[in-house]
Image 1 (cartoon, rainbow, N blue to C red):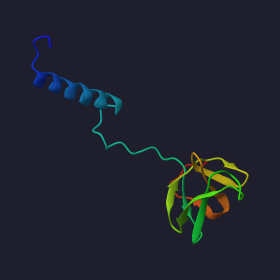
Image 2: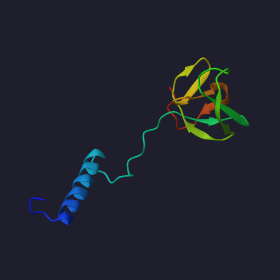
Image 3: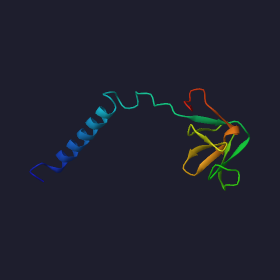
Image 4: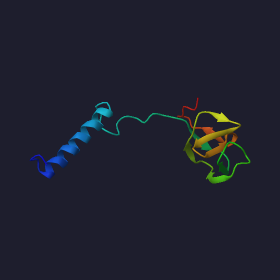
Length: 103
């Protein structure tokens, strides 16, 4: 390929990727910048049903145990907090962690 040995192409690709990662991280080593804090909640009841939508009539898709910490959305709809697409919990049974930004 244009007179460049295959090994050279691989090395150039690795260096280009590392350079792009360095620039994207603001010139800092990866892992040295603290992750942005979002909303995280902790389960405050023995077990908590995770439902497919924001209502007690929605199907249960999983359960969480007391003390489990999960990322969550800041908004509450119909008394339910969205954890992820198709995963909602009753907001009365979770509380934001001390370091959360749940708005």
